[in-house]
Image 1 (cartoon, helix red, strand yellow):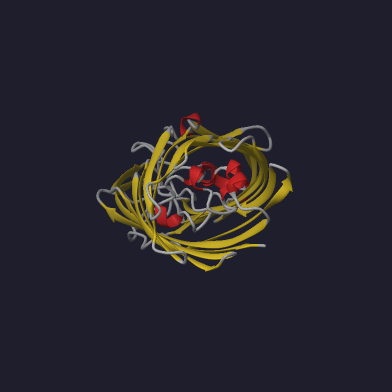
Image 2 (cartoon, one colour):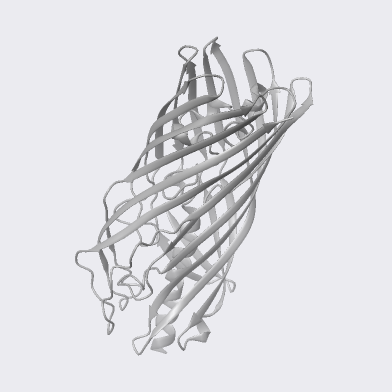
Length: 421
């Protein structure tokens, strides 16, 4: 009976951590995927809601389609994202009857984030477009014998988002846009479970599809200055998952669900053409993470499996950037941004050991012809040193305590091809 109880309780924490990690990927720090094109990467995505360089404006501000040249445009892009996540032990306590283990190695895994956009004239003053991308995602994996294996081993989350949109040009100085978002999320999370007599293994998988929307506006404040406003709605998920358990407690297997609302976000952006060579960009983005206070996982019988505190906070992202146009063929870009994390120090977990980050980016554009461009960019994200004291007790008193410091960073490399016809 004791083994069964411990298995069920530990598994409930695995489910909560798994589905909770999926929640924390959207539109902010915490492994957020703001990287929905490569043309904005060189500017650290500063002013993305006002830039409207190409059809990828569908994601950042659909009103920007009104500023694109007449005809059709396709955009193909990919970003390679490599986080580095390294734990240093301070005062971790081994699980009951188990060796402490190592520090887990580099838990960061390379992510390939592709995107596709298409925009076209629909009618006089109207444009239509569609974007396909991955608005959030994550894959981290520690060594299976590390000291935090009872908190987390593997965390893998992937999404796909389809975003049909329209824009309307009201006048020479104002345009508006609207889009709907159909999104699917898939998650798999694993961790060890201490059964006292032996170590078990929990594997949790869940997925859901849901709908949201995004809208935006563009205003030409002066001949050389443009203001962009954009908003992305929250999305409500009813995530269905299956929990499987190895190690002698098959009664812990079963179906679980989690009702979750990921936050909305709003951005104010400016683009200013300083002179024929230089353009300046800037933006401020708010994300309403504070609506996520805790995560309640429920079995299909209606019984509450776990209730995990998250206590996320609202976040701000501030970015500035510049583009220098050498000639009709070449341009260079640079950017700087500060991105807050919604994770607080008390409730930080090994699945999401995130902290505030600073972006430094460089990039450029090569105009291959009058109808085709090639964009490229590189960014390095400096993440503040992060402390963790994850103690799952009293829920799982035999799982030990993870206490130490994380040193994290992220490197991003992106390339994009755009073609008008």
